[in-house]
Length: 95
Length: 326
Image (cartoon, rainbow over the protein chains, first blue to last red):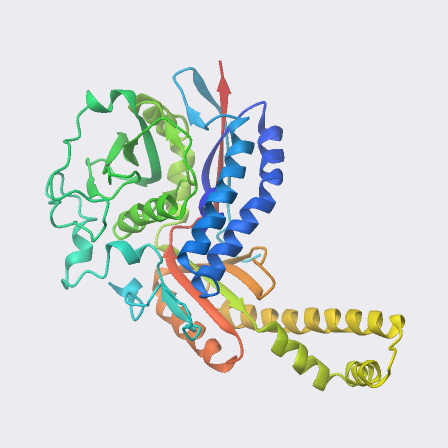
């Protein structure tokens, strides 16, 4: 596993204008949960916990994440939405 | 099948296994591969509409019914959204087989605007949990697509309501997507996570550092060690560990600088990890990078290296599309 974090926050992402700040705050809020999930995945890979133990942690963490996210609703694009701006950053040279 | 070299059969159970060092692996490969046919892997990525036989891509997945899938039908799909995996350059319609997200693997295909294409599959219009299965499915699709295309990866869980919305997305940011695709051409991301045995590191620090060693003796020798001595011992251990892990990380990064285009350091996960880095590699340096990672892993034999890839450039492309909701 090990790449969940990148999948969720790297690459191309949709955000609702006007509530960008709220979305960022939410990411802060569930940051601790994501860390728990990542750590569980790492421990599964290292063989420190088994599949069943992982599943238990996963469903618990996901349920709590869902609670946070449901306040925002699913992030999807509907016919009434308009793309108001594109922010692009790439990192293809040495720091 | 270069990317799976030596790792396709890595047991994912891991339990009790010796830590795998510097074995590059794709977690997503577990379900669909290894593909025993010498050519098997490349087939799915080919731009051959309708030609990707479903039976050819059949995977040992228990959720898979035996051979028959509902056809991709606009009518059936009407109540559903479209899950987007990535954006590529292509004016040809593409099909990648039934490898998409969902309890029943969905057909993955492309939606176009001029020379840009979004790789999508039909999915229910609802929030998608980041379960391992879902995340692996997302990754499996991107892995398949990137065999033949430069990919701008979409972050996990993005669903559009209609095909038209996706066309609008491609149209409205066409210039930017074109630029990013150019920049990322022939570049691959690799992940390198380094873990140590913290207890062993503490023991080493205790022997290597005179002050710490003396304090430890003092504490264990006395009947009632002072609070102060304990505090000081803890602080010294922490800072010695910190310094030691920073030395490791600096040395590893330094070794990899010449064989990578760029690197990004992410926050380590858990208390065993001392480095969590992503590297952008140009294809022609891939072998050199690979060799370097392996030689580093051989030299630091007390550390465990988790080496993964190639990935699409998740850590090196950051695009935020701001939506205005009417």
